[in-house]
Length: 322
Image 1 (cartoon, rainbow, N blue to C red):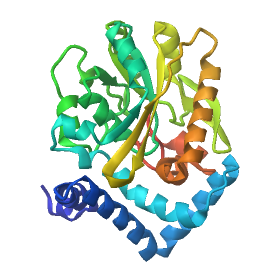
Image 2 (cartoon, helix red, strand yellow):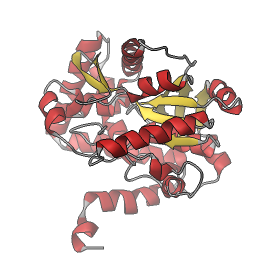
Image 3 (tube, rainbow, N blue to C red):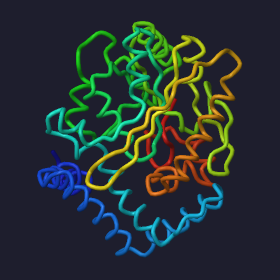
């Protein structure tokens, strides 16, 4: 470990602060994380202005009747909760973690998997999206992620990512330097896992230019989105489940798994439109959980050049790579 590493904010936040706060219990940990988020916005006026502009821009696009006086501090608080990812869920028994989630719609996913059909789970960057993955693993869902390997996650998730098992997760992770041949290989692994009755998770809100993309509109801006999930759904005929996870007070989460549907050939573009409309309704209902969608440039009005020119990992510049 270098001296520079020791001084980085990520080292202090993920390796020092969050483990300390986690020991205080869910409610106190969550309250302190949220309080620090609000404090950082209040202490740095440019940050407060950035939040205000983002709220106004998204509210106008969605025709939302938000109260900026309540949404802005809530968004500031959730910005730090978003950065904390699933660290607050580490180092606790399964039953304690599962009890912190208010879950709707799991029965449909469970039925599909128990019937050996496989399932495509489409998530996004809203709210506690990493916490949702944590819950799925703890609940025993046979899950494979067709995304870039999430960084700065709990030890629990890292252990699960590194397991040696049939359809190992290492065969599914995407990388920014993935060759076309390896990308095709990842899709073959996903298809095989679905046919063996596993669930494959993909993000549905990734703006990108390139193969396996389709045009859509989000927050008033038209762009192309990675839509591999729709292609896989048509190819395998397995059900598609949309998943949303938002923060609740006291270190709790609301997790919704929606009623599934299947896609036929030719319905891919309509499926993306349907998904983005559903995502917008979640953002409208939970603006403080839309940290990525309101604050990351890849979702904003000037993101087109960043998307076209970037090969970065998931970040504020671009949500992911294909």
